[in-house]
Amino acid sequence: MTKTIFEKIILREIPANIHYEDDEVIVIDDINPTAPIHLLIIPKKKIETLNDLAEGDTKLVGKLFQVAKNMASKFGIDKSGYRAIFNCNEDGGQTVYHIHLHLVGGRSFSWPPG
Ligand code: 5GP
Image (cartoon, rainbow, N blue to C red; front, side, top):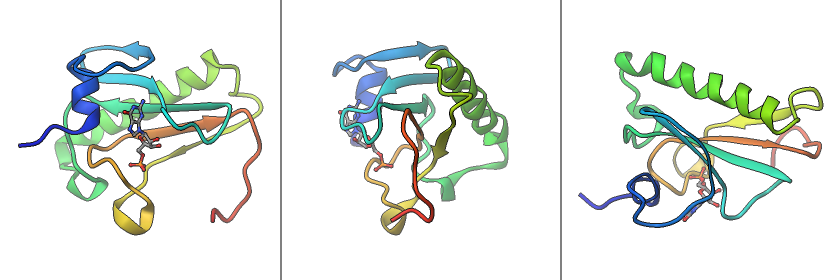
């Protein structure tokens, strides 16, 4: 099966700016940031979309949010605020089919999203 860009980053086949890594999760800068802080919190397990989550992935997805919280604090956007977003499939704007939580902050965001 073809590797996604994130699998290639996890395997160090292509470079990325890595802020955190453990046996389950890696956190990198988005290559095309949409805010002053734009991190991608990526599980090492490849799950293509949120639709593919299994019961057994509940703890892993919870961990992604715990890591996001820690990163928000580390980058000093916890008090000012931020968004943590999963995009799913075409209408959701997903372009890489390996789930990832976007953590964006450092500016204010409008609602509803465009
Ligand atoms: P999606 O559109 O799937 O929700 O988000 C994919 C994100 O991955 C995009 O924000 C895009 O800028 C980012 N991205 C795509 N290719 C690369 C890459 O090679 N390196 C990094 N660090 N981010 C990437």
